[in-house]
Image (cartoon, rainbow, N blue to C red; front, side):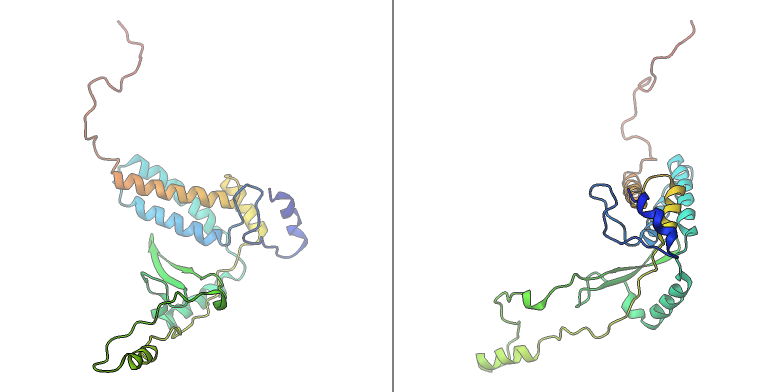
Length: 241
């Protein structure tokens, strides 16, 4: 796995794992932001569990386990996090319109939205992949244009280009990603979780959230639609005469 690599972490003041690098497990690569991902997933899970009855044993057990794991991941603070958080809050305050929930990506392909889970606010951002505009082929379609009264076809064609909406994004916000955890911090977290690599912990958390959503949708706490026959759930038991 990555144990041999992490033994060298003590040689330098701070050593970081490279996102996308192999972890030693087939198909599993180094996560770029495990801390923020886990905090969001656990918060979302706790949010969903609130829709279950308080008397639900499933809710009580999963809630306790999720809160325990959330406390573990929140205890690990990456270097420079306080400065980053203050700067991030300032950017969001100065550009409120750029961090609203949007159904689609912006013109430049960047999607930024603020979402809430368990009373916490998270920023979701997806950046577009780098594309060389020279590699984009024209689809052969002319730009859309409306009729301009009695204008000739040629004049309408030229006005269609003039009236076309500009593809230039009106404003760009320089956003700095959350600081990464050091290799030592990640190794310590993996020891506390006791569930393999941090990437495996993220996968388990994602699947647990999906399970909670399915359980909530099915309303598993309600009575069965078809009542079981008397003695159906009674198995072989030693009964006294």
